[in-house]
Image (tube, rainbow over all chains, first blue to last red; front, side, top):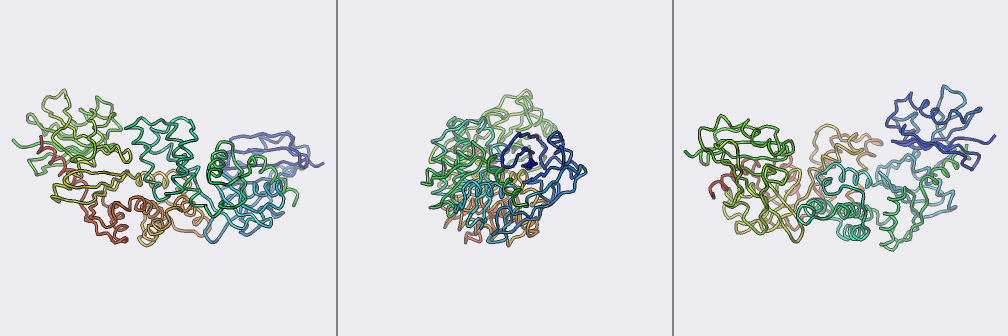
Length: 293
Length: 293
């Protein structure tokens, strides 16, 4: 019997995959993210998705915010430099004894600056399973984008830039929301804004109100304004992370639309990133953790 | 009879002052800002504060968002370069014939970048009444901080940086809210962050998540985190506006706490700004407009 369950349990969503060894058999998901659950809510939320898969004791390997202090059980961070995942996972006691749950620890960095990740370490393990001996930089775009130096099978160091959350908050909660509605996209203004932010990063915050004024005075379209805001913020991130991608071998792992924007911005700077889908890398990383038990 | 009413009508608040010529007799305020009122709500909101002051026809001079498209009556922008206020105000028809309302137009800039102000032009007129022949730069900190070049009695050009709104949104709406609660203040980390942002503006967005990680890993205090966030954002603003303050004569007009932070940041860069309270400058500017009718 080689079936087991791979669990990607983030802040806002829960995604489970029934595995037969290395092969996914079925995937289900729900909105029961870590944010929505009290400690005693995790087991029922998991059972609601997987109970009919349980015909006996079943290994369950979970990654993500499920291992945070406010999660199901705290999985203390590994500290860089370290392999992204090891066999040292945190077992969780369950009422239903068929569940043999283990949580993959997140990774922390103490210097040169404090940083943390939970979930991305598993995607990085997936990258190392997919590209054996990968030596370079992994860029994982998202709400909190991670940049990680990978070498000799270890996360050497990493850097979080909260570009996705900044974009969502500025576009949704500030006065700019009146000028950025919809979800249109215009590649030209995006790339121009990336380039502007890279060459004059000191003007970033001053550029933002221009998006409102250009709407009021010149009727600038919301699509153009959204593309410029995205370009300014991703450009600012690339300015901050220049040593991470300049002349490096870069892989990007993320959700489709955001991943394409980062790839496009990096290509315009002469980088040739390879792209791996985030869901695939998470599953590969959980497999990698499972194999180390 | 030389009584009249000075009105500062912004997005979130209404403030009225009964004037005898140049002298304030009484001030009242309410939360009936432009944001909360439909077009036919402005006159009742004003009357609710001033009706017992009306013993006959009464000139009322108003500035701020009351003159926006979504306000009481749209007061089309003057265009830079221009005096901050002129006698050319927009009269508003009222049901109560005792009210003789005029609205001070805002100011727009078409190049080198699009920009707009409503209300700050009146404070700038107040600065020019307070410091006759002022030639230099006015910094008006707030939700949307304005920097204006003033020369020969005119606004030559200006620049808006939405630092106040960025601070409120990042501190209140993102993951950093867990690490920045309260309203403590620590001057040392603030000034250090200003200096960091000025010397390495390209790292701004990457520095933000450090505030969360330093809390999780090192128990950094919320007071320190708030001071650093404020310093990073004001430092980024000073980096963007360097040509506006470097070697210039600078006056600051704003609310107490924010004004002190800007003054402190500028002094650390060798600027010696003079400070005028915002409410006084608004009143002086409305007086200046009233005298030009």
